[in-house]
Image (cartoon, rainbow, N blue to C red; front, top):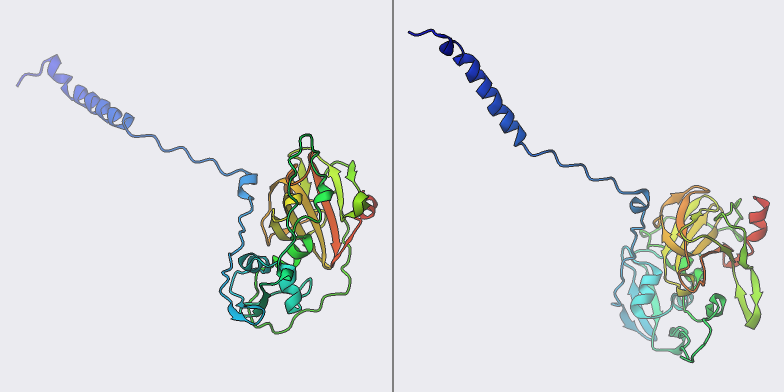
Length: 300
């Protein structure tokens, strides 16, 4: 058997070839997929709540229909299904400002009467050079108001209740923090020319600027059902007070969420009838809107 120098290198060459083959196989292994970036805070906190549509399937009764409340329905959804303002349904059934509808409850829905029809929006004249209506001038043009959102947006509770908690006669005012950085008041609280009334204050803001909860509370409503206010968030606070934040560009909370004082709840904008970036801010005690400015200034 020959044992020359060439044959002595055969084991080494075989090992080298095997190593190169393994390296080539390894180089052909596809790289691991890059992880997807986590959603931004604003994307993760986008409102996801949507009302459950109601169906106008109530039994015909004298003067209207008898609707049985189903899981997930709200007073506003029932009103939309029958095309009858929620305030009319609430009044016909003795439903108060802070009452809660219950699954299985039968609601009388008045239909076929002039009372059941809400006010119609004003028609545009189309005249050249006509000024855009002031936001406050639209206050009487739409059927929905914040009272209806407060009393009609709660999801039907399970039935039957053991006992309903008593509501205090007048809600308590929480300690309020300024909801935006600005302090310029574009429109103050109270009567306006033409017999109109501003039930809140309008604060100048930077488009996209932070809108924060004025006090700790629970998100009662997120939506744009009142056209003049644009995107609107309502918070209910301990003691029964409600604060409203309108003309938002974006909402960063969802219905039912609990927020702390100063928590980011939205971005300022010019939605609805606003002419420039601003925040419409209201403080409501029961059905009564009160001027929030003295309470804000006392906490400045």
